[in-house]
Image (cartoon, rainbow, N blue to C red; front, side):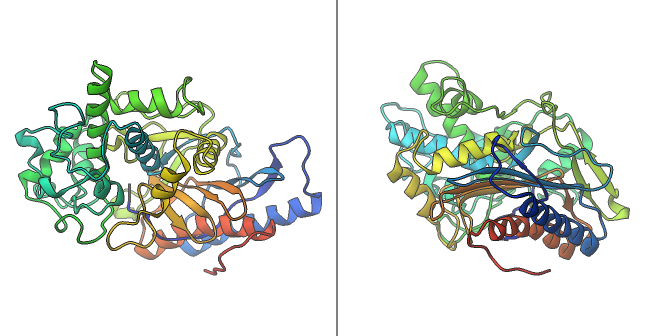
Length: 412
């Protein structure tokens, strides 16, 4: 899963209203459909790889639309199609941490070596595996902001891994390996890996969010009196049947949990020919990505989440939501506490994992929420990667433009 934090661009095609009464005229629908087809096709022409589909779900105060464009022969996506929403998971993790903060279960300004309130248990284990560089200087807030300097063993090369990240190297030898937070974190101390001291700058780190998953599990265990996991807390408080806004989403943490519910999109990744060429992902092991990128859901459910959260109709108070949105870390003017500020889209996150790209966002200025998904990631060159990634944002802005909302002007 690559670091996909501050790029922005395009959206999808065949317009289908999610309401019985579609306020768009057939002419407007056809215009949007044709325009978004052009966007998807243009990405393929620029990169040399056909983009299978590009889809957008958008909700305004007046209407809800699902828009999708797909290549010939591809099964059309629907608003109920499942996909892996990858690093959008980080916002769920932040919501969990901030909900615990509101309840007094933890203090986001505490160091991870401090003790959980009303206990003598530290936020992270005091074991050799957890001898993280500058451990006593790392706070929960800095982890949420990617401002802790924690080295990312999921994305960046790790010694003794043949120039690959620890995740890539381990998956190459055993795609079904059961990853644990302890083993990911152990690489930091074993090789003295870090970017810089906490608070000096910004560097996206999946491993930093892996640490947050351990904190959530330990705090919930202490407060409940029984062994709990990250997934347990999310289900019990954020998305399960007793949550304020129940959701049909999932956060698999076992290597055996590789299947997506049906119907689901297939992830497509394009590599250079000498690196394997085109790869499709249907089932895959995401146990290395707990709390930082293991989530899946549908357009409808992800939109329900981001809209309810950002409007104060979910688990967090408005003041905490504002903190999430605006508490930018050192070296960043757009990343808050598991939340990105997007140009002409508002607040939310994005994600990329094994052939899936996605965005979820809520724009308070227009009361508009959006979910965008493109099941294509292009690694054939850096230029093609950026063109492909930016294309997803371009689709979003194109839909906003056609609906009379503010949008970012962009051309390939």
